[in-house]
Image (tube, rainbow, N blue to C red; front, side, top):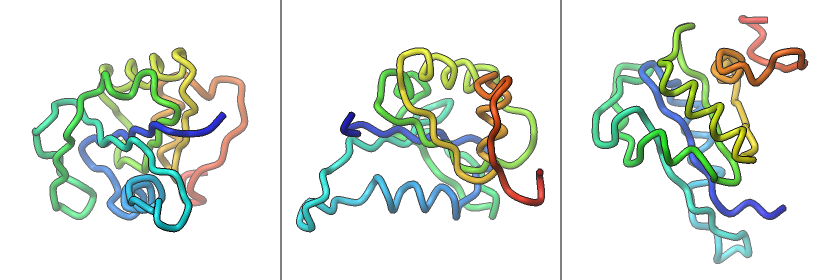
Length: 130
């Protein structure tokens, strides 16, 4: 399966490093180097509404949670805290049910776990949270 569409989830407390890595890998046009472009979307609870990051700066998602569903890959960066909005968790579940690959970076695994996607499965996360 060739990946063509990638959406990343941002919520309050998103870690800028992990989010940045996802953006660097999937969000930059490298077609001049022979790498295919991705349809890359940054998705949050409310498009256009700023979200505070782990360092206090803000990120403004251009797309809503519905844009997580039906893409080839959903990338979830580390997000601070241990409580996530029910709407975000439902969107992640719907994305998985639609056939999207779910990729987590660092403690983003806790979002997938909170959505019930890791029940009975091994996973890895940041050493500090293991």
